Length: 184
Image 1 (cartoon, one colour):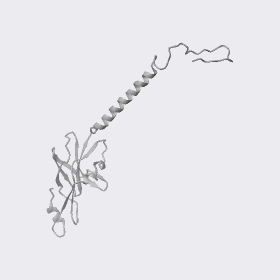
Image 2 (cartoon, rainbow, N blue to C red):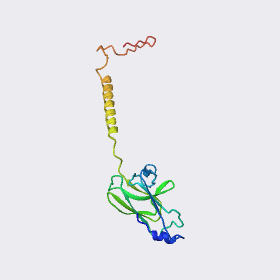
Image 3 (cartoon, rainbow, N blue to C red):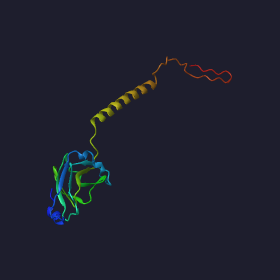
Image 4 (cartoon, rainbow, N blue to C red):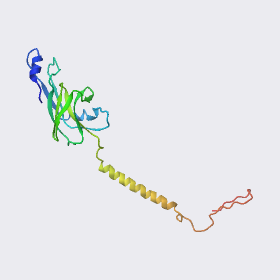
């Protein structure tokens, strides 16, 4: 992390400066990338651990020079994706005030104009990988459905069923409507 402590010390009444740095190993499980609201429909992936930097007794939190920090990727980097340096603001990840200086397959360097809680989120547009178990279940269901459909077709096909071959399966309707009989 690169921060201008001289600037913070000069703005302090005591002329000294202290900055606290924290890294949260599993915080990305709570502050999920889904809390990063974007206008486009993308898949969001948390690409780093969540880190914080803060002043113990802030008198002036406005920085004249940005704070730069490097985040290591915790997941595989997709070159077709879009990486964003974000900070946590009460209930969502926000990108305003932060930018990506450079990135490679292992690390991303972010620059922000304030101190906060930061992370790295990647947006990709392709659908997630399919689940092999669901594909197998789908295949089994289709095969079972086709078997039952074939059995249904065979049971209603001409020449099948319990017909004895006699031609007495006709209806006889007499002219006299008082004496109607139907023979099967």
